Amino acid sequence: DLLLSNSCIPFLGSAEGLDFRTLLLDEERGRLLVGAKDHIFLLNLVDVNKNVKKIYWPAAKEKVELCKLAGKDGHTECANFIRVLQPYNRTHVYVCGTGAFHPLCGYIELG
Image: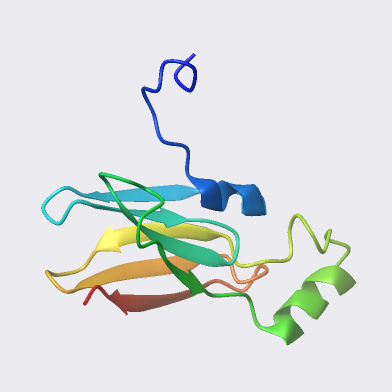
């Protein structure tokens, strides 16, 4: 119904099938951070398809292989699913992902 009424703008990046997990709204700067499978997106709130910035952050290959050896599904479980997007200060966001069952965290500069 929303699409038919032109009341929304679908995010075209979702066609990649990235299994979106977490969101962080930055109203002050008019941005939305989206955590997904192996990716972090920085979207414009006015038009989510305009000037999309994307960080590719996969799990280490050796961690993916260990995950598969443990009997996990390589396509649905052995990836870096972004679970935490937390403001750290005015310039950085704290980010954590599953890292194919070996969690890893870091900071993203929002410059």
